[in-house]
Length: 330
Image (cartoon, rainbow, N blue to C red; front, top):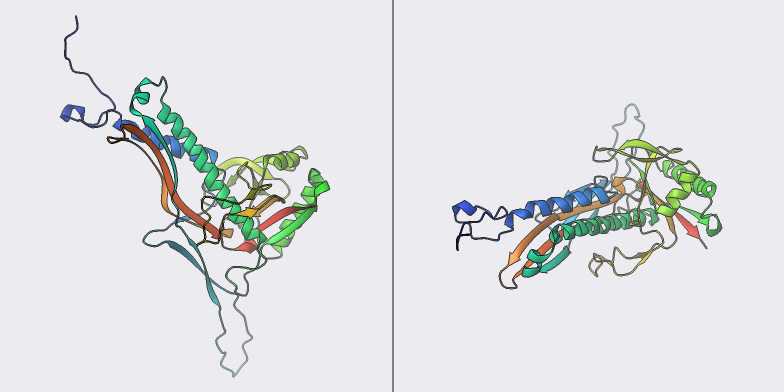
């Protein structure tokens, strides 16, 4: 017969032998955090590609640039004069925390036959990956659509736009020709697709359309962060190619979570005619004040377990000449 009272081991309670009286599930937090970060790294196609700078002690990340500088001939007997140089800046303000939260009643946590918190962590990681990718894609496309640089200095140019008729949208040869024209025009602006780490992004339908024409092949490439990845490369131009449902081509985004009056609804836009975008990491200025943070905690007042994942970041066009877009005409 069992004793009326006896000791039990709670492996998820912190410092039980030292008289721990906290949440019996406290030590599960680290597993939850890892799940979200692992899903983000696996599901995000732009993770490690866009350089996201830390923003601390301020709300705004600012990048400075100098315009084109001249050159002069040295004339014997004449002291050369100094030449003008134009400086400017571009900024992005981070003012919104994006949060994924789920609340589990106390009894449900113990009676659920599977670890609901872990499943929620996986779902949160996937949703955050989609959210970040879409925001970065939006700003890359907006950079490509700009006809002038936000710096406004000489030597800083706008993006590159190439259009194809709607009837040619499913013709791999027509899309290939449009991309060739796009890269040629970008190179006319001193953009080297290879050394400038240009990447090509499409939605899955357009990606597989080009793949059937054997324009896209398997290969190995190095991201802007220096990470070597196995993926797809556009055979003719040697640039990495990513396909993603997070690419906003074909969408009209009107109420993006990060859009507000302060940034002029910067993440909204009509991208229904966008077919593909090519851009370098330097085409986008991105920063974050709160990197991806995940936690699970028990609230005594509500007697519920909370599963949270949150982050605060922002992005804006930086160097439009390093971005190009293929659009579809009616």
